[in-house]
Amino acid sequence: MEGSMFCYQCQEAFGNKGCTTSGRCGETSETANLQDRLIAELKAVALTLEGRTNVTREFSRFIVRAMSATLTDTNFNPDRIYSLIDEAKRALRTLDSDIQVDPSVLSCEDIEERSYRDLLMCGLKGVCSFAFHALALGYEDNAIYNFIIKVLSATAKPDTTHERLALLIVECGRIASIAMALLDEANTETYGSPAICHVSWKAGQNPGILMSGQDLKDLEELLIQTEHADIDVYTHGDMLPANTYPAFRRFPHLKGNYGGSWWTQAQDFASFNGPVIVNSNCITPVQDAYRGRIFTTGMVGCKGTPHITHRHIGMQKDFSEVIRLAKTLPSPTPLDTDSVVLTGGFGHHQVCSVISQIAHYIENGTIRRFIVIAGEDGRDERREYYTELAKALPPDTVILTAGGVKYRFLDLDLGKITGIPRIMDIGQINDAYSIIRIALELQNALGIRTLDKLPVSFVLSWYEQKTIAVFLSLLTLGFKNVRLGPTFPAFFSPGIVDVLTNDYGVKPITTAAADAADMMAGN
Ligand code: SF4
Image (cartoon, rainbow, N blue to C red; front, side, top):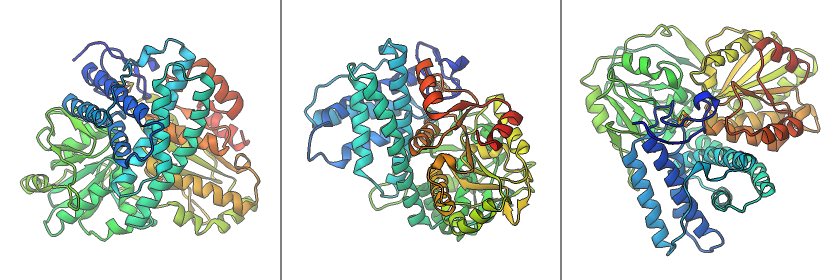
């Protein structure tokens, strides 16, 4: 449905300016405008909560959940957004509040001020997403909740100054690090530390269920419910690193990964033949080839697609309908990646256990530099850059990667340096905390005073809001010369670009060869 809307929160915004009639992602103007209304209601709740004491965590939990529904590629179902708006209105009634907030994204006419507000909101959505995944495993932090309320309140007020917004953006980076650390704690305490292992991409003979997204709790419950059912479970897209957790590897029917990056799902889901469950922000409009065997869960929604509802207290989500359907469908068709076996599981526990050896190799010149290529993947043809960059880097460099951008180079054979693979996959973008931990441990092992002097360069591949949160956290920690591509966000004003360039050394990507040479020179 076409109408009037405005959204520029992801890298695929039309013309790198904004989607104005419908989203390139598949969002209709109706759903986009409802999401703006939802955020306005959440701001009203936050304004009401600000300064109150003895407020229960229930409101913060709701805000985190509802904000997660507004991330790119998450919820295309207007009915689900309506019900979240109703929930927000109920919260306001419970709080005895009649506060209202203007939902228009463009209500602020000053382009610089709007840019500060939207960069802040984009980072906040990333923080909310990390907090939402941690919450699913029972991990929470009041510092994160208080910050979310503070930002929603500040961005609801028209008189919040530029300077205040700038300070909040810096704080957003700090809170993003805390949220990532919390999620890392949640994941590793619940499922064990990822271990270096091989992940198969081979299609098996049994009927299968494919899970795409980032929510590990869903995968755990699906694996339990499919045990001894002669059904294989596969991961897709961002779920790939789940194969490296000890708690999941004990299930022999977790067969491995099937297909590629989130945006190749139309082909991958079609040839999978069995049911597919999408559980966080990576859904594209459903195609006829797999309509009828795709399910959403969590905050994901798509009109006409069956939704597996949330888990009730003390119970698992009910995947029985998916399992019943799987038993009636054929096994997956092998893909041309069938013979690929990937090595993953390079989380901070694994890498930091050999950090003194790595530091030794850096000191004696065996390893010259670590290049972090992290972030999401997407459809933009310019993302070929990330493949070319991996190929262009000299043989004495090691690539640390996290997030979907890995699909751009994970199957390249770049060899090893004295037994250390030249590509280390640390996991999802949700696992970016591992990169920070590795950098901090390396700083300590090398006795380097500031992080920007480490032989580590960052090249981010941004697509949506979580990478922006990671980006802000890197800047706040003190990393310089971070490269961001394939384009700068549409919500970066000239003033923001000036600050990022002059104060933090942020750069746009150029060509793989030029950037590789520049990074090797320490720039
Ligand atoms: S999320 Fe991205 S593609 Fe979708 S409407 Fe917004 S800017 Fe456009």
